[in-house]
Length: 170
Length: 170
Image 1 (cartoon, helix red, strand yellow):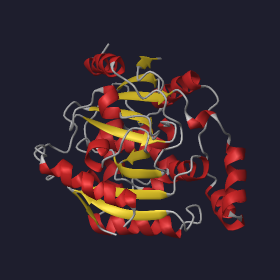
Image 2: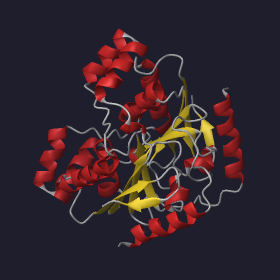
Image 3: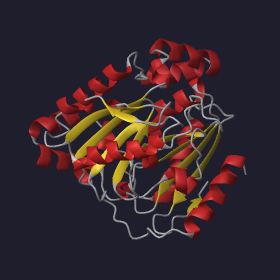
Image 4: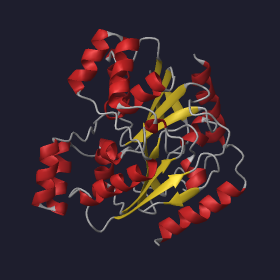
């Protein structure tokens, strides 16, 4: 067992020993979802005030709304959420590279067969050069999609990894 | 401002007032990533023992590895992680519907234009009928992909929303 796996097992023993929330229902109690980045420096529950059971939390590289669309449709249409908080953050890795960089890196590090697999998927890494513009664009993407109905409330934010503060952009 | 937005602002004020982790680096300190579900009943940091700055956390509907591949490649190739903990959970919404159900629901609730947009995207909702089998299949998918190099350690787990406990599957 790896040290990381051992940490999960030990943490789970501790967490479950005092766990009292086994009664929570599947649909989020407060009917909202948070879409944020996978970045290791973000703790959504603590930083954004999410109580267990209250909200879906979707996380991917860059808090991409395009990437999250499948999960968002399921959250809203099958599980009844009707508000989206989209939170990108300062110092995001997605500000530091382009698709061409990522494709070149995969070829260099993983070889020709991995590179061919990546090209066959035509994967878009969805990096962005400007943080606040990316927040606005993602909010616009969600508002423009017919798959996100007009009655869903959508706001866009930036979390500052330097200060722990979240400020509204749109 | 909605009540949900007001909660984020108030929580952010409280969190940032005592925040002391502004020095953390972009790459995860413990070089691992956790892939789990967006489900509201999961608090990965608490349940899986993840300290701020230690690990990427990717979350989507069902903890789908297929859906998470873009983020996983970025995590490993650009930000240096080399271990994956994949954690699905009991009571997952993804056990309760099929693609046909979701397509019918979108047409019924959002109308013909939304349905046409969904069909144009040919979106796979990636639901699954058996929990542990889905964990195994996703681990196999990652191990089989040339985009996830062989030296990456991958394990699969189930979090029990009833008990707060996480047990290993593969």
